[in-house]
Length: 112
Length: 114
Image (cartoon, rainbow over all chains, first blue to last red):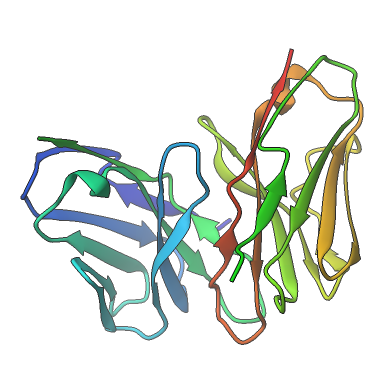
């Protein structure tokens, strides 16, 4: 079945540093999404990408839909303490599929 | 606007007991999804509904699990009888037809079966 490999699994950075994480798939996806999950809460949608090559920003967050449609990237610039959490990528095969396939998550820890 | 609402937020029960988890989707959303999250398996889709009709329940682990959606604003996930391995966080999510993939999650119900 379809699987997403998300890396790195965890990151330990200093406040103010930039962060990069990525997600790769063995299959083509037509939609990529990035979620953030805080402890004790549900995942919150950060960015949705619909077109190969698309680059979308949401504040300090920037995500890209890879040109091969098999990968996606999320960058966070100038990290702050509230960026701590688990970031998940998710892909949708096509509009009719409805289901999302989730990556394993990247746990971000920020040292003050 | 209110987001997805789930209740209870925490549930502790003994093995063999019946557990019912509840979800109210975002008003106007016609898709509803139930997920389970564990450390070992991550986020797993259990079942999803479209316009109150179950479309795909292939992720439901076994017959002990059942889900209903009697109307557009309410869904339940029931486990009967519960087992310790059912301990997990259960999420409900909803989306609207026009939004490709954009599912909005509730805060989850943390279930502990002892």
